[in-house]
Amino acid sequence: MRFRSTVFQFFLPPQCPCCERFSEEGKQGFCSNCLSQIRWIEPPFCSICGIPFISREVETHPCGACVTHRKYFTIARALGAFEGSLQEAIHRWKYEGKTYLTPFFADWMAEGLNRHWEPGSLDLLIPVPLHTRRLRERGFNQSLLLVRELSRRTGIPYRKSILQKKKSTIPQVNLSGVEREKELRGTFHVIGKEELSGLSVLLIDDVYTTGATVNECSKVLLRGGAKRVDVLTLAHVLRSS
Image (cartoon, rainbow, N blue to C red; front, side, top):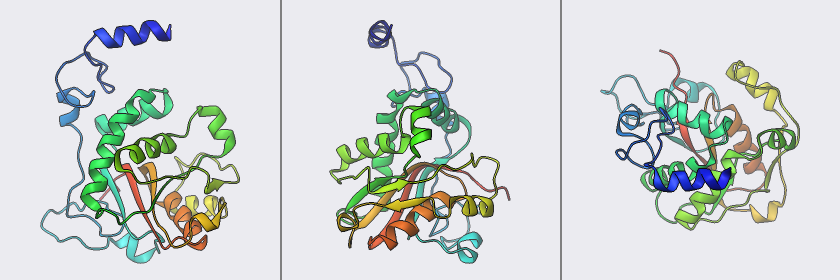
């Protein structure tokens, strides 16, 4: 069945991962209509977490949430808003096992990395880890898939096991930022601190929601010896005004 599907994909035009229509138009597997609906994140945005500001007349500066709640990462950047066709594509990739989307997403992330970071400023890529139980359920860690492809495109090495999730947590989709922070406290730990010492790390995840997960990971990585931790995600959940 898999071989037959592969043959069909070879001869047919690419199928858009959002609307699932076959189209020879568009870019990187997405039809032009769905691609046009993605709201790419551009300045002005928070200089720390990267969330875009509603007003386009202001300058880039720290948002209120980053001023009042400490961030252990230096900067976080995302490619687009977690809505519409980008949200649909991420859901299909993450929950329906459409891992063939990984190279498309990695191409976008490589462009974002080159836009927001100077060449040579990053030493190591690290994926946000899954607990072993969640990994068995899903069959793959989406963040690790991105890291592997991003490493191939940039030449930046990665380590998949330095940061580990040592306890399972409840689903966080309905939790507030404060509740997420409480649930995640003490969840992650570092193995092999000697490999991390003095390095500038880029932490990779699929979606920045409240920032609780990447912030907790960043705290643990800094305590484990990293010099600096930055964050890159595919999408950022926008707070309601």
